[in-house]
Image 1 (tube, rainbow, N blue to C red):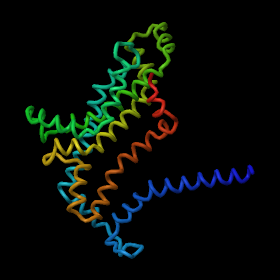
Image 2: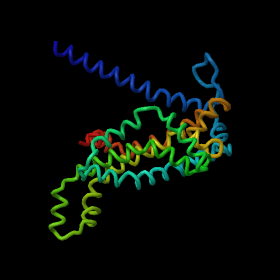
Image 3: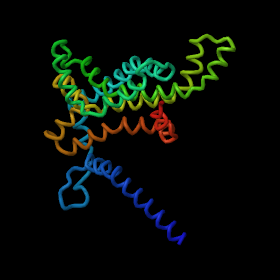
Image 4: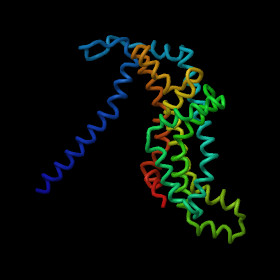
Length: 272
């Protein structure tokens, strides 16, 4: 019975892997085919021809090119602002024992547990009063809301994982507190901080609802332009733009795959 059980187990694993390939790679393959297809009419199994003109159409369109520029400019600003706000809080959560610490940690997740559209609609009235509608500052704040959990929780766990004995040894050797922080604590916590920064970048880069509500029509990013593409452009152009939208996610996840696959991301959510 053991050989039969092994065969069944490996067969089930192979089916699961095949299903993941189909559901994950399938849409990307479909997009890639349409991005280079001249046209593709049913019931033909292959495109009627191949062309690069849809790529030219994307980069030649001023509005689409502007949205790409906005996304690549605003998202790093959001990550930087998130780091300035959240990293001190992450260090405090990791190293200080204060009243309400656990409740504040739970609240970080609670903010992301509900749809944000109501929050964005509420913020809109405040934005109008402050003159932030249709501004880069308003879009940055809207995107910043989705990065807080990543730039606080993950770095906090990274700071907490640094052995205090190493810091004490550095202090005993004569190093100042500032030098210990930069040479020991920050250096060892840096991989977790980078993972949090990557996740925050992806959250900001893919944010559409708040960006559209606050920025449109003056400031449009790649996710918000997808609304227009789906409704008003040929599907081949939308396929090209979708592939471009997925490039940062794929590149950054490949860059941090060692930490994600090695358990860094999972361990980062085990902060106690």
